[in-house]
Image (cartoon, rainbow, N blue to C red; front, side, top):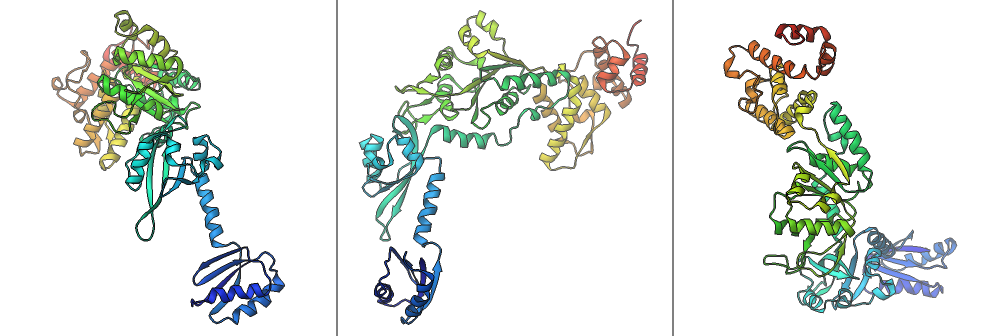
Length: 511
């Protein structure tokens, strides 16, 4: 039984309380003193003996109460501490002032590949195999910037929190080790918190529905995927949806734009670099995206812009999953799915000698072609309405709507910049206009690549003429693809009679 003796603190009172138990020949297995409480564990004490013991203890000057206790506070704290350490997926070590390991959680035992009995009592310098780093850590009182160490041949970034005695001297430290893929999980969660799956790919046109169905099947196949499409069609969004639909969905996703960085920076971003690899490098080195994304996916955007040197290095990784950091001499391995994208014709680049044919074969195991916006015109107005709602929410203005003339103008525009251009046009219109209706002039589409058959806005005198011009151009473009009023009406989501009337009005159709 465990009891809590509450008392008014005075010199010798704890001895008097324990003397009462000793006189009754009660074996005391644990005692904790936290004034004004004395916690006692006496296994042989039963309920009948407790009442008599309580009367005797209350006779001691200063004793205020004697209550039954479920668990000693120190035992409870140790239990919670063990549970807390066991729940940590990152290795955690506690060392004393001399750098000797005194506590290690299960993750640290697994990382060391040693039995817990051998790990406890091991010196830090023996564990990390770097005597100079261990000495520096001790000399600086465990105050050191996050540094890379190797334990059992595996890299970890570690940080330390010094523990101080009441007088201020260092009593030891708690060291937390972070594996590169664990760092990657956290970074990926921060960068991709709002990214979705295939539901985030907007559009209900046949081309988009077919693309999503094909992509959903390919997402489940753990093989390299090449996405081809014009600029602004949403290739990265599709890549993330494929990751979200794969077995790797719970693992990191990182993207690297191969066209945005020079060769040296792109190499260090993708493969990482060893300590002191170049001037300005972090002293601890840095893991690359392949290490951070271990178990997940890396998206290489504009892979056609990759230099020949990086093409060769990427090819080796795709062959066996191994690579070396920049300036490093250790072979590293990572389990990463590569999804790449380009707007360029890689086959022509291979023929011209600008892209490796063997790398293309490795990247183009699975293939997706993203249709440009001009080939999915039935999606233009619904997409524009979504972008209007988003822009209004982002700018904090009341919800706006598109006029019929604005919708006709959007449909008539060729959109060489695809979704990105459409989104920019809508955002600019919403930002610059305070009207409840977004009209043609607000879109600022003049000179944005309108079709030659579409009348310029300056050439028409009234809104009706402008709408008629856009409407006629749209019908003239679509009629050859849908050469009947029924098919054209279904394509445009309009009534059969309305389309027939407009075709007669503009003289479109068989003659």
